[in-house]
Amino acid sequence: MTQHTARTRALPRLAPITAALVAALAGIAAAPDATASSHREAPFITTAPKVDGTDFYMFSSYEAGRAGYVTLLANYQPLQAAYGGPNYFKMDPNAQYEIHVDHNGDALEDLTFQFRFQNKFKGITLPIGDKNVAIPLTQAGSVTEPNAAALNVNEQFTLDIVRGDRRTGTRASVTNAAGGSKTFDKPSDNIGSKTIPDYPAYADKHLYTVAIPGCDKPGRLFVGQRKDPFAVNLGTIFDLVNAPVSVITDPQLIGAVPNTIDDANVTTLALEVHQTCLTKGEEPVIGGWTTASLRQGTLLDPTPRSGHQTTALSGGAWVQVSRLGMPLVNEVVIGLPDKDRFNGSKPRDDAQFADYVTNPTLPALLEIALALPGAAPQNLPRTDLVTTFLTGIPGLNQPKNVVPSEMLRLNTSIAPVPFAQQNRLGVVGNILAGGSDFAGYPNGRRPKDDIVDISLVAVMGGLCMANGDTDALGLGADCRPSAVPLGATAFKLHDAVDQAVAPLMDRFPYLATPLPGAQ
Image: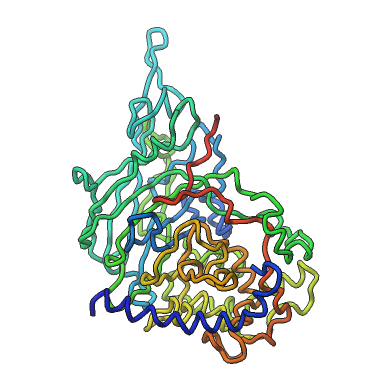
């Protein structure tokens, strides 16, 4: 079956969802304005911030002229202070960073994009008296070009595509369409305006058009520091939601407090690939997630050589230490004893974590935190959360032969919505507002989607309010309004920080210029 046929057949399935949601939410929509991801989320990963994945995005590209493309963004190294010199936030050359795609719903990776980094030390010296002495900084002057002479350390990376199993599949190199090089330069972090006078222009010189083996259409690639796109009331949330119920249920106060991490940067691995290279033809829904792995053994070198890029000698098999698909899962769904296990696991083995989804503790914790006894939904097991997190929603983003597993799922046959028209609450938010945007979370994830607020609504029963008494969305017969003690109030929950005002771009790589260390 051709891709065109698959897309044509998938689109009509959205009509019943639209009608069901509109009918179920009609009364709620009449109410007044009823309209972090993964930072240091597990014990081990706090000791290895260079391989700590913070956010994963996968969405149909909404940049003008890029119809048919899918953008995948994997952010690493959380909470970067822009002034973090003298070494700043270079990627780990002893790590392997990966973006995985499942194109048939079987919970196994079919495509893996593997990133490996190298730090090229130049050993810049200055004449001091009768000696040439190595400088202590990462730069010795102004930087305007890739691999500038003034850069004392130049970060480079390679990108491979693996088809099949990530370790044993068929491997090939992604190359620069201009010249065929297998090695790419990563821009220096945004040290400040004296070192890098025009950072946006400098960063754009590291945006590559690439040839992807097995794909007849060119892709795009960028790896570099960006302003953290996530907006969250971080400290308040983890201090047992230290905010009055009157605030977090008042739609007028969605942007009442500033974004806690508005002063932080991240490092982004950004890919844009044509959807025909990611799908299998008959199935328009793809699943995606990102991981990072380290070598099994590491020894410290007691006498590192001058100019050597590490004092750690690594070897042995790759061991996965970070995993991120759907946002917030390991942070607020997986229990503390299993967080490291989740980070090392694969989607095909997710049955071991099922209790955390079917019988979640977060609603009960919110009862305690907000002094709202009895507020947790009563439809146990939570089939609505199983559908949202483990299978995708029927008719929206569920593969036809899905194996339950945690990953971000995107229906590539659903057209993107321009940035300005995107609703921060994704699919349900647009229906509440009378719109027709099915291109947002939980159908993939765009940078503008307010996943904190959407997740609060979902975990406290908002989807069951929409499911109604007829199981209109296929979320389970017990997932009905009578099982939601908060009722329509579930749709008003928010963290008082507005994701929609976070600075973003409307073009690849979509995330904003990183904050400078100095003006």
